[in-house]
Length: 293
Image 1 (tube, helix red, strand yellow):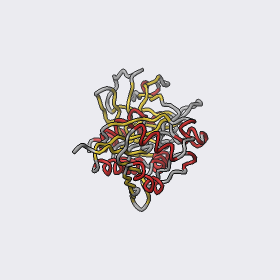
Image 2: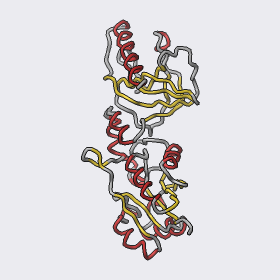
Image 3: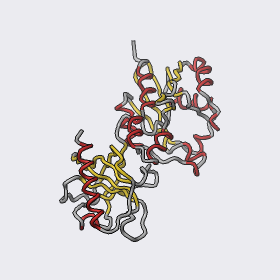
């Protein structure tokens, strides 16, 4: 008996616990092809409401495979695609392009022009097109639905431990290490300044404990996000990571990953260098302890 062609559809930004449940459900029926969309449909339909990303598309594909997808297809979501009727979407994409024999979606997945295709509609017409449909109830955690937008809000709010629970992994940011003001270097805490795109979801200003990775190396780190209120000068928010006890790393122009494990404190304005250094020592001690768990 050949395996059924099972298709799971969704945006799957973050590949959180709820998304993993959809893929696990799909795996019960056969080999899973995941269909995901890029750019985010909102960026085409209502650009001013485009959400920031939890992971890049490349990483989303890798996480979906790790969650059990046999293959992942990234469908280019453009103007033409956004105006397909629900029936055209089923005929052109699910049947025509993917020859689906079983389709799995979350209960909040709508499709087709103006999101007119509902999960209920899909399960009603599926048999006519030759496929069964499984609708996965949204996963709950502490009484509310696990969703990408909820995780995004938690991260933006600085509630990194909660966000990580729902993601089932550490939230991270990736970017090229750029030249900052080199101030950390002068005071004995050289930080890697991460260059980020506008689509990145940046945690609330503050100090965090986590990890800094470059290539195959991964170091425990103290991470600072903010505009650095202690030193005058106008600048945007920055994400800087100091690999604990490493003062000789040369990371400029390399791609780095900063993982957030724990929030330590809010950003503070210090009266000069001494109190700042004292606090930084405390932050590093705390980060060292937390990341060694």
